Length: 349
Image 1 (cartoon, rainbow, N blue to C red):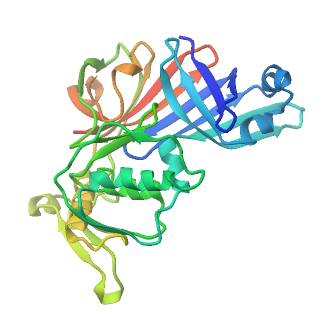
Image 2: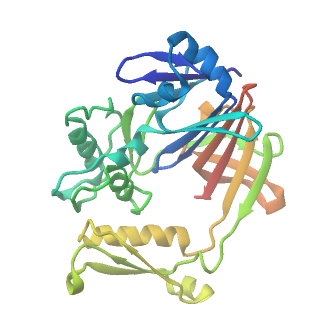
Image 3: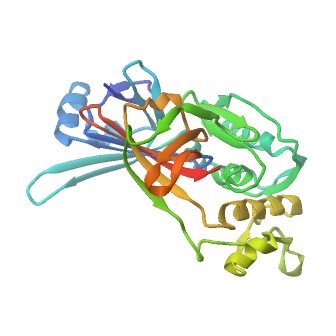
């Protein structure tokens, strides 16, 4: 398949089509996305920069630049902004050019909440847009993010944010850290979507087996990666710090002995939120978790599923027979011939 790489200078609207050597992007559920692009330096300098009387450094760094990956049908597979320019020259005089990028959600790590933003007794699903919208009203603050799908959780949280990293604040409120909260994304149309209880659905039409799996790996962390008793500390000072202890059931603890850990969240004194954060850690760590990584070819249409979706896996070598696993992370590699290979990190449902 033919994939197109487009660079757009946000302030001027100038658009450039970039010939690439390798494209890679990594997406993680409720935690943003990163991309890297490898180019032939001479080709970029002569074919792209030459006609516009510019140079590769200014092409990528003179202004905030948006970069997108499109398929042959003009569908946007990935969208973000340039975050780093790397040009090197080796002892033989050969140039190498790599550019890194991040999605719009990851860009929010460079935005901060106010000096004293307090959300008291509100649905956590309403906070992400409130934080983004307030940030976008600042001078030169508009990123073009709008509201997409909305949802309510029926939960109530109290959170105090002081100059907090907006990306981290949203991630920490989501299912990434809080059990029973919401999933979310900022899609390639720059819409913030909130999903409850979870993002995605069962994609039974996609079955991963020997017909499309190029490689697979199975990892089962034991002991040091197990937590069956977690202490969660919250906001406060000295003896006034909010704290809870969440425990797995006694039979589960007995199987591997008592294995403890501590997590902290200094933005909330709400014990119900702290309990949910502890429960999330227990859900992921109270027993050895089956982590499966699959690498598959482009015969499986990437557009038929996404992060959060549930796929069917058949790996007889691991006694996995048409079992359902949830897509937690996706890594995509595209070479200059247009060959796409995706690696999926899956979690047991």
